Length: 220
Ligand code: TYD
Image 1 (cartoon, helix red, strand yellow):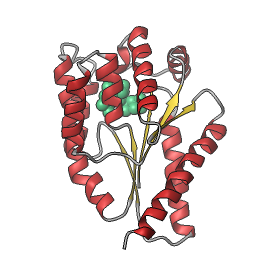
Image 2 (image 1 turned 90 degrees about the vertical axis):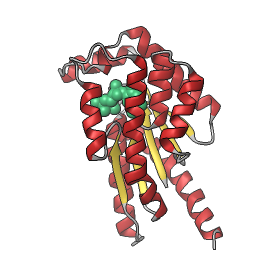
Image 3 (image 1 turned 60 degrees about the vertical axis):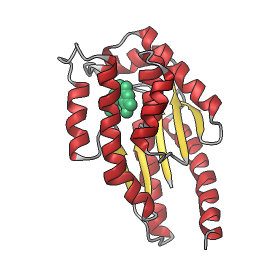
Image 4 (image 1 turned 135 degrees about the vertical axis):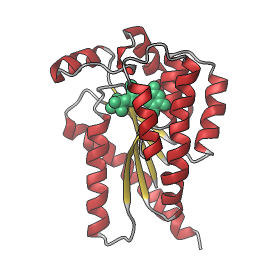
């Protein structure tokens, strides 16, 4: 089973991903199911991908061209898909990923306004068609980003330095993805309490888990 979490910066998706992973790991122990739960973040997840991540988030790389950005995120993804995600899924493990190719559609496609046809082609190449069974978008209004950032008191990285209009477009991109693929992509309201969001997220995971198990049983 392959689950991804998506959302704007400071949406709380990482917290939700961590909680889901904890629960999935406990479930595996309780039911004694012989499979592992891998938790990855994008960009990252392999030695090469983490090095690409450093270039992408480095605040001094202000001259980075949009196409370079798209290809670097995708290069990082191609590596983690081939080295970690695909082999894990083939073994029957569960993979949870904090961001995946929908981030590229939302941030580079809608945010940076790179041609969506090109984004689709590059995403298809980087993932090689390995797509999540479930993608959870944790949705917050754009004003929440600066409020939460101020609360946390952490400086912006290169990506987070983009303006408000950029994030409005990214959010619109996520809405478009949810509308286009309702069977895979679900949206949860990220403004509620952490526990309430966690419960909603878990309902979606249970639903997909059931379908997944039924499918496995049907496969001889
Ligand atoms: P990170 O510090 O991991 O932020 P977050 O906790 O919000 O995931 O930085 C990842 C940044 O890279 C984030 O601003 C989103 C951006 N990003 C893209 O623009 N395109 C992509 O394909 C991916 C995976 C991330």
